[in-house]
Length: 340
Image (cartoon, rainbow, N blue to C red; front, side, top):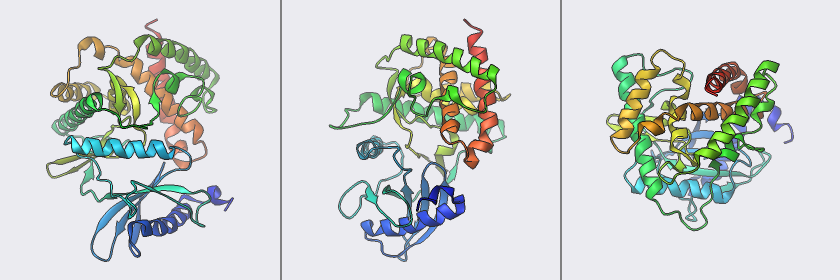
Protein backbone atom coordinates (compact mmCIF):
# COMPACT_ATOMS: atom_id res chain seq x y z
CA UNK A 1 0.00 0.00 0.00
CA UNK A 2 2.87 2.39 0.71
CA UNK A 3 3.84 2.12 -2.98
CA UNK A 4 0.46 3.44 -4.19
CA UNK A 5 1.80 6.91 -5.01
CA UNK A 6 4.62 5.41 -7.06
CA UNK A 7 2.15 3.65 -9.36
CA UNK A 8 1.47 4.90 -12.87
CA UNK A 9 -1.78 6.88 -13.40
CA UNK A 10 -3.22 3.83 -15.14
CA UNK A 11 -2.36 1.58 -12.20
CA UNK A 12 -3.81 4.08 -9.73
CA UNK A 13 -6.97 4.30 -11.83
CA UNK A 14 -7.35 0.53 -11.49
CA UNK A 15 -7.07 0.79 -7.70
CA UNK A 16 -9.58 3.64 -7.59
CA UNK A 17 -11.96 1.63 -9.75
CA UNK A 18 -11.95 -1.11 -7.11
CA UNK A 19 -12.71 1.45 -4.41
CA UNK A 20 -15.50 2.91 -6.58
CA UNK A 21 -17.12 -0.51 -6.93
CA UNK A 22 -17.05 -0.97 -3.16
CA UNK A 23 -18.37 2.56 -2.58
CA UNK A 24 -21.41 2.03 -4.80
CA UNK A 25 -22.80 -0.43 -2.26
CA UNK A 26 -23.56 2.60 -0.09
CA UNK A 27 -25.99 3.64 -2.83
CA UNK A 28 -27.48 0.16 -3.11
CA UNK A 29 -25.66 -0.55 -6.38
CA UNK A 30 -24.08 -4.00 -6.25
CA UNK A 31 -22.94 -4.27 -9.88
CA UNK A 32 -22.06 -1.65 -12.49
CA UNK A 33 -19.70 -0.93 -15.35
CA UNK A 34 -17.13 1.71 -14.36
CA UNK A 35 -15.05 3.77 -16.76
CA UNK A 36 -12.57 6.54 -15.99
CA UNK A 37 -13.63 10.06 -16.95
CA UNK A 38 -10.90 12.05 -15.24
CA UNK A 39 -7.78 11.36 -13.20
CA UNK A 40 -6.39 14.66 -12.01
CA UNK A 41 -7.22 16.15 -8.64
CA UNK A 42 -9.99 13.66 -8.01
CA UNK A 43 -10.76 10.34 -9.65
CA UNK A 44 -14.07 10.54 -11.53
CA UNK A 45 -15.85 7.52 -13.01
CA UNK A 46 -18.85 6.99 -15.20
CA UNK A 47 -21.20 4.43 -13.68
CA UNK A 48 -23.51 2.33 -15.90
CA UNK A 49 -25.89 0.04 -14.02
CA UNK A 50 -27.58 -3.10 -15.41
CA UNK A 51 -30.92 -1.22 -15.22
CA UNK A 52 -29.62 1.44 -17.60
CA UNK A 53 -29.06 4.16 -14.99
CA UNK A 54 -25.98 6.35 -15.35
CA UNK A 55 -24.11 8.36 -12.75
CA UNK A 56 -20.81 10.16 -12.19
CA UNK A 57 -18.89 8.99 -9.12
CA UNK A 58 -16.19 11.19 -7.62
CA UNK A 59 -13.41 9.92 -5.34
CA UNK A 60 -11.79 12.85 -3.61
CA UNK A 61 -8.09 13.42 -3.16
CA UNK A 62 -6.86 12.68 0.33
CA UNK A 63 -7.00 15.44 2.93
CA UNK A 64 -8.06 18.32 0.64
CA UNK A 65 -11.48 18.96 2.17
CA UNK A 66 -12.69 18.13 5.65
CA UNK A 67 -16.02 16.35 5.86
CA UNK A 68 -17.65 19.63 6.94
CA UNK A 69 -16.13 21.47 3.99
CA UNK A 70 -17.25 18.84 1.47
CA UNK A 71 -20.73 18.79 2.97
CA UNK A 72 -20.83 22.57 2.58
CA UNK A 73 -19.80 22.32 -1.09
CA UNK A 74 -22.65 19.93 -1.79
CA UNK A 75 -25.11 22.08 0.18
CA UNK A 76 -24.21 25.09 -1.94
CA UNK A 77 -24.66 23.08 -5.13
CA UNK A 78 -28.14 22.06 -3.98
CA UNK A 79 -28.92 25.71 -3.18
CA UNK A 80 -27.75 26.82 -6.63
CA UNK A 81 -29.93 24.14 -8.19
CA UNK A 82 -32.86 25.42 -6.16
CA UNK A 83 -32.21 28.91 -7.51
CA UNK A 84 -32.47 27.70 -11.10
CA UNK A 85 -28.77 27.37 -11.88
CA UNK A 86 -27.98 24.09 -13.63
CA UNK A 87 -25.36 22.14 -11.67
CA UNK A 88 -24.78 18.40 -11.14
CA UNK A 89 -27.57 16.84 -9.08
CA UNK A 90 -26.26 15.17 -5.92
CA UNK A 91 -27.54 11.63 -5.32
CA UNK A 92 -27.72 10.91 -1.56
CA UNK A 93 -26.55 7.49 -0.40
CA UNK A 94 -28.93 4.90 1.04
CA UNK A 95 -28.33 6.43 4.49
CA UNK A 96 -29.36 9.88 3.23
CA UNK A 97 -25.81 11.27 3.33
CA UNK A 98 -24.55 13.60 0.61
CA UNK A 99 -21.29 11.61 0.54
CA UNK A 100 -19.71 8.58 2.15
CA UNK A 101 -16.22 7.98 3.53
CA UNK A 102 -15.00 4.66 2.16
CA UNK A 103 -12.04 2.53 3.22
CA UNK A 104 -10.66 0.01 0.72
CA UNK A 105 -7.65 -2.28 0.58
CA UNK A 106 -7.00 -0.84 -2.90
CA UNK A 107 -6.11 2.69 -1.68
CA UNK A 108 -4.04 3.73 1.38
CA UNK A 109 -6.42 6.19 3.05
CA UNK A 110 -10.18 6.40 3.54
CA UNK A 111 -11.66 8.51 0.75
CA UNK A 112 -14.71 10.72 0.51
CA UNK A 113 -16.98 9.57 -2.31
CA UNK A 114 -20.03 11.28 -3.79
CA UNK A 115 -22.41 10.42 -6.60
CA UNK A 116 -24.18 12.64 -9.14
CA UNK A 117 -26.80 12.19 -11.79
CA UNK A 118 -25.18 11.77 -15.21
CA UNK A 119 -24.82 14.89 -17.37
CA UNK A 120 -25.09 14.68 -21.14
CA UNK A 121 -23.15 17.08 -23.31
CA UNK A 122 -19.69 18.35 -24.10
CA UNK A 123 -17.29 20.72 -22.42
CA UNK A 124 -17.35 24.29 -23.66
CA UNK A 125 -13.57 24.06 -24.03
CA UNK A 126 -10.37 23.13 -22.19
CA UNK A 127 -7.00 24.62 -21.25
CA UNK A 128 -5.20 22.29 -23.60
CA UNK A 129 -7.53 22.69 -26.58
CA UNK A 130 -8.40 26.34 -26.22
CA UNK A 131 -11.75 27.93 -27.10
CA UNK A 132 -13.66 27.65 -30.35
CA UNK A 133 -11.82 29.10 -33.34
CA UNK A 134 -14.94 30.71 -34.83
CA UNK A 135 -15.21 34.34 -33.68
CA UNK A 136 -18.96 34.24 -33.12
CA UNK A 137 -18.69 30.97 -31.19
CA UNK A 138 -15.94 32.56 -29.08
CA UNK A 139 -18.14 35.52 -28.21
CA UNK A 140 -21.11 33.27 -27.50
CA UNK A 141 -19.06 31.01 -25.21
CA UNK A 142 -17.60 33.83 -23.14
CA UNK A 143 -20.95 35.59 -22.95
CA UNK A 144 -22.30 32.35 -21.49
CA UNK A 145 -19.46 32.25 -18.96
CA UNK A 146 -20.19 35.85 -17.97
CA UNK A 147 -23.85 35.12 -17.46
CA UNK A 148 -23.07 32.10 -15.30
CA UNK A 149 -20.58 34.13 -13.23
CA UNK A 150 -23.17 36.80 -12.53
CA UNK A 151 -25.98 34.38 -11.69
CA UNK A 152 -23.73 32.45 -9.29
CA UNK A 153 -22.65 35.68 -7.60
CA UNK A 154 -26.24 36.89 -7.32
CA UNK A 155 -27.20 33.68 -5.56
CA UNK A 156 -24.20 33.57 -3.24
CA UNK A 157 -24.53 37.20 -2.13
CA UNK A 158 -28.18 36.67 -1.23
CA UNK A 159 -27.88 33.14 0.23
CA UNK A 160 -28.03 32.66 3.98
CA UNK A 161 -25.34 30.13 4.86
CA UNK A 162 -26.52 26.98 6.67
CA UNK A 163 -25.37 26.42 10.23
CA UNK A 164 -21.91 24.85 10.33
CA UNK A 165 -21.05 25.90 6.77
CA UNK A 166 -17.27 25.72 6.22
CA UNK A 167 -15.28 26.53 3.13
CA UNK A 168 -11.79 27.84 2.42
CA UNK A 169 -11.21 31.46 1.40
CA UNK A 170 -9.43 32.84 -1.64
CA UNK A 171 -8.56 35.97 0.31
CA UNK A 172 -5.26 37.79 0.88
CA UNK A 173 -4.00 35.10 3.26
CA UNK A 174 -5.26 32.24 1.12
CA UNK A 175 -3.54 33.60 -1.98
CA UNK A 176 -0.44 35.49 -0.83
CA UNK A 177 -0.13 34.81 2.90
CA UNK A 178 2.43 32.74 4.77
CA UNK A 179 0.55 29.50 4.04
CA UNK A 180 -1.43 29.93 0.81
CA UNK A 181 -4.16 27.44 0.01
CA UNK A 182 -2.16 26.00 -2.86
CA UNK A 183 1.28 26.25 -1.33
CA UNK A 184 4.29 28.63 -1.21
CA UNK A 185 4.46 29.51 -4.89
CA UNK A 186 7.54 31.73 -4.41
CA UNK A 187 9.56 28.57 -3.62
CA UNK A 188 8.83 26.87 -6.95
CA UNK A 189 12.08 25.15 -7.97
CA UNK A 190 11.75 25.65 -11.73
CA UNK A 191 11.83 29.45 -11.35
CA UNK A 192 15.10 31.11 -12.31
CA UNK A 193 16.74 33.44 -9.80
CA UNK A 194 15.38 36.45 -11.68
CA UNK A 195 11.92 34.91 -11.68
CA UNK A 196 12.15 34.13 -7.96
CA UNK A 197 13.02 37.79 -7.28
CA UNK A 198 10.20 39.01 -9.52
CA UNK A 199 7.60 36.77 -7.89
CA UNK A 200 8.68 37.71 -4.38
CA UNK A 201 8.42 41.44 -5.17
CA UNK A 202 5.06 40.98 -6.85
CA UNK A 203 3.77 38.86 -3.96
CA UNK A 204 4.50 41.64 -1.45
CA UNK A 205 2.78 44.24 -3.62
CA UNK A 206 -0.26 42.06 -4.40
CA UNK A 207 -0.70 41.11 -0.73
CA UNK A 208 -0.73 44.78 0.21
CA UNK A 209 -3.19 45.61 -2.58
CA UNK A 210 -5.57 42.77 -1.71
CA UNK A 211 -5.69 43.87 1.93
CA UNK A 212 -6.36 47.45 0.82
CA UNK A 213 -9.08 46.29 -1.58
CA UNK A 214 -10.96 44.76 1.33
CA UNK A 215 -13.98 42.51 1.06
CA UNK A 216 -16.93 44.67 -0.05
CA UNK A 217 -20.19 42.72 0.49
CA UNK A 218 -21.24 43.17 -3.14
CA UNK A 219 -17.88 42.06 -4.54
CA UNK A 220 -16.87 39.19 -2.25
CA UNK A 221 -18.86 36.04 -1.51
CA UNK A 222 -18.87 32.35 -2.35
CA UNK A 223 -17.38 31.80 -5.81
CA UNK A 224 -16.89 28.75 -8.00
CA UNK A 225 -13.16 29.63 -8.32
CA UNK A 226 -12.63 27.48 -11.42
CA UNK A 227 -15.23 28.82 -13.83
CA UNK A 228 -13.37 27.94 -17.02
CA UNK A 229 -14.73 26.55 -20.32
CA UNK A 230 -13.83 22.97 -19.39
CA UNK A 231 -16.12 23.19 -16.35
CA UNK A 232 -19.16 24.18 -18.38
CA UNK A 233 -21.15 21.37 -19.98
CA UNK A 234 -23.40 22.13 -22.92
CA UNK A 235 -26.15 19.83 -24.23
CA UNK A 236 -28.54 21.31 -26.80
CA UNK A 237 -29.82 24.50 -25.13
CA UNK A 238 -28.87 23.43 -21.62
CA UNK A 239 -25.74 24.79 -19.91
CA UNK A 240 -24.44 23.29 -16.67
CA UNK A 241 -21.66 24.40 -14.34
CA UNK A 242 -19.64 21.49 -12.94
CA UNK A 243 -16.66 20.81 -10.61
CA UNK A 244 -17.07 22.83 -7.42
CA UNK A 245 -13.97 21.29 -5.84
CA UNK A 246 -12.18 24.66 -5.53
CA UNK A 247 -15.27 26.67 -4.59
CA UNK A 248 -14.87 28.96 -1.60
CA UNK A 249 -15.14 32.54 -0.47
CA UNK A 250 -13.45 35.05 -2.73
CA UNK A 251 -13.63 38.17 -4.83
CA UNK A 252 -15.93 38.21 -7.85
CA UNK A 253 -13.03 39.73 -9.81
CA UNK A 254 -10.94 36.66 -8.91
CA UNK A 255 -13.68 34.56 -10.51
CA UNK A 256 -13.62 36.67 -13.67
CA UNK A 257 -9.81 36.61 -13.78
CA UNK A 258 -9.94 32.81 -13.54
CA UNK A 259 -12.35 32.57 -16.47
CA UNK A 260 -10.08 34.72 -18.65
CA UNK A 261 -6.66 33.74 -17.32
CA UNK A 262 -5.53 31.23 -19.92
CA UNK A 263 -6.59 33.56 -22.73
CA UNK A 264 -4.84 36.67 -21.39
CA UNK A 265 -1.99 36.62 -23.92
CA UNK A 266 -3.98 35.49 -26.96
CA UNK A 267 -4.91 37.80 -29.82
CA UNK A 268 -8.61 37.18 -29.18
CA UNK A 269 -8.38 38.21 -25.51
CA UNK A 270 -10.21 41.52 -25.84
CA UNK A 271 -13.07 39.83 -27.69
CA UNK A 272 -13.35 37.19 -24.95
CA UNK A 273 -13.14 39.76 -22.13
CA UNK A 274 -15.74 42.07 -23.70
CA UNK A 275 -18.12 39.17 -24.31
CA UNK A 276 -17.75 37.91 -20.74
CA UNK A 277 -18.37 41.40 -19.32
CA UNK A 278 -21.39 41.80 -21.59
CA UNK A 279 -22.85 38.52 -20.35
CA UNK A 280 -22.10 39.38 -16.73
CA UNK A 281 -23.79 42.77 -16.98
CA UNK A 282 -26.95 41.12 -18.30
CA UNK A 283 -27.53 39.85 -14.74
CA UNK A 284 -25.32 41.86 -12.37
CA UNK A 285 -23.73 45.29 -12.15
CA UNK A 286 -19.99 45.51 -12.85
CA UNK A 287 -18.73 49.12 -12.71
CA UNK A 288 -15.79 50.14 -14.87
CA UNK A 289 -13.93 51.31 -11.77
CA UNK A 290 -14.17 47.77 -10.42
CA UNK A 291 -13.20 46.20 -13.71
CA UNK A 292 -10.09 48.40 -13.80
CA UNK A 293 -8.74 46.36 -10.87
CA UNK A 294 -8.75 43.15 -12.91
CA UNK A 295 -4.94 43.18 -13.49
CA UNK A 296 -4.43 42.73 -9.73
CA UNK A 297 -6.52 39.56 -9.78
CA UNK A 298 -4.80 38.18 -12.87
CA UNK A 299 -1.51 38.27 -10.97
CA UNK A 300 -3.13 36.77 -7.87
CA UNK A 301 -4.59 33.94 -9.96
CA UNK A 302 -1.17 33.34 -11.52
CA UNK A 303 0.34 32.90 -8.07
CA UNK A 304 -2.15 30.15 -7.25
CA UNK A 305 -1.23 28.21 -10.38
CA UNK A 306 2.47 28.40 -9.48
CA UNK A 307 1.55 27.02 -6.05
CA UNK A 308 -0.47 24.28 -7.71
CA UNK A 309 2.47 22.97 -9.73
CA UNK A 310 4.84 23.43 -6.76
CA UNK A 311 2.77 21.17 -4.53
CA UNK A 312 2.24 18.66 -7.36
CA UNK A 313 5.78 18.61 -8.72
CA UNK A 314 6.65 15.31 -10.26
CA UNK A 315 3.15 14.71 -11.63
CA UNK A 316 2.67 14.51 -15.37
CA UNK A 317 0.20 17.41 -15.39
CA UNK A 318 2.60 19.70 -13.49
CA UNK A 319 5.46 18.82 -15.84
CA UNK A 320 3.35 19.49 -18.91
CA UNK A 321 1.77 22.76 -17.74
CA UNK A 322 4.68 24.10 -15.65
CA UNK A 323 6.58 26.07 -18.31
CA UNK A 324 3.43 27.75 -19.64
CA UNK A 325 2.18 28.62 -16.14
CA UNK A 326 5.55 30.09 -15.13
CA UNK A 327 5.83 32.16 -18.31
CA UNK A 328 2.31 33.54 -17.97
CA UNK A 329 2.55 34.31 -14.24
CA UNK A 330 5.91 36.04 -14.58
CA UNK A 331 4.76 38.07 -17.57
CA UNK A 332 1.69 39.28 -15.70
CA UNK A 333 3.70 40.00 -12.53
CA UNK A 334 6.25 42.10 -14.45
CA UNK A 335 3.49 43.98 -16.23
CA UNK A 336 1.72 44.63 -12.95
CA UNK A 337 4.82 45.95 -11.18
CA UNK A 338 5.51 48.48 -13.93
CA UNK A 339 2.51 50.42 -12.64
CA UNK A 340 4.22 51.08 -9.29
